[in-house]
Length: 551
Image (cartoon, rainbow, N blue to C red; front, side, top):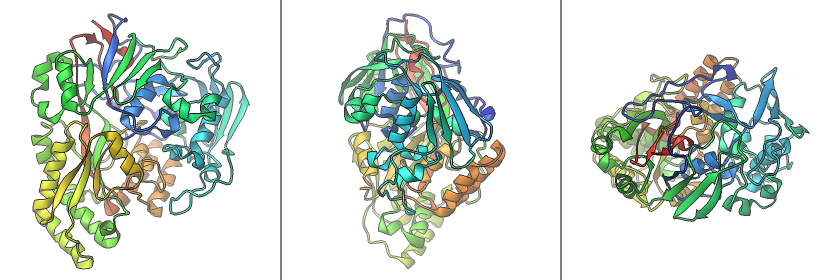
């Protein structure tokens, strides 16, 4: 899920806990079923931001919208605190060949308006999400389903053309509680993806009027939307029709929209905010002493990168590759982590995250991530010998409302300027939404900061949605047929280990092309007020909001 939003394995039986434990204070890694106690009448005030888009399952792929969607919706499965799949609306997901799946949903399940949840609600929602004319950002997640090419009408260069069908041939409704899925090839980790936002069901009314539904969804999760005051707050209340494992232990969640993390932290200290994920850079040295046992530092499935779009002329061809390498080697990641993030990050050594099964810290080509200002200048000069730099300013776009973004972008651009002898500076956007809008429209004039927070626990989730040709989160418009072929090969592998080895081979291609520059792996820094208890953060760095109660 997501900017800043993962299959850990090929094979459902291989989904195991990732062993993410708290490094300081806070959570114990407890599961949803036994966490939280105390005053259940408490409405939890939580840190948030304005979602980029209306709240539609297949069009939400960023953190502020994603955290709301995951609370108001449930899918076939969800993920517990450690990343294991847990059945939500699914009664069973069965296959004999990893290509043909029969999915049964639990009888009697209801949407928040009381209408029944049926197999047709899933099939219709997935077809709506995949159809290219609906322009949903998460359409790529349906790529594995037979018939996707007909509804997406994606050309070889990743551009959208007119669809030749309105529905995917691989989906069929059997009865009210049963539907079947045929994939274009065997993929045994397919069930693991089904807890992601894109796969949530939708009512017939929502598909008929997605604009209205996006503003006030009829949903299936532990909470439902009460009010959305744009750029101010999003109020959620418990959904009385929810019967799944994530039952709320509070009276609701109000996501307060902040324009800076510093303002949120100030509210946290004064007990006007109950839970904050992402301590601002200026407070990283003091937040543990400020908050005591109400603070946490916890690794999770997430990373940070710089995207340099392939559509920028100066970064195309061989000269473009050399320039990307030069910029990567110009950045002293360790110094930035030490001085700005108070050592709460880990230097990146690949494009995924260490908490995932199959992770490797020794992929051939990863030396390009090592700081070496002298080597960086030589690479830059080699690029100039092919195509001279036009003396323009190299910029890195960032959102001001994100914790530490300005500080690390200023540091990185200063290092790039000093190493390469060029002009470099940050390009601020007031909000994450504004930045993402320009990213999605392919209107960047330089690099942009990005962070990926896992959708489901897998190496593939850090690769396919971000770098596959035409993928919805492929910010830099990267395309390499050899990389796409490796992804397909890895998905069809017969074992977890075999698939992960292939995905790491795919990363060798990424290290040659550098569609993004990996910076560091994320550790969640967070805190909570004196007014709440039962706070913990999940495998993907997001608070387990449903477990929080009042004291």
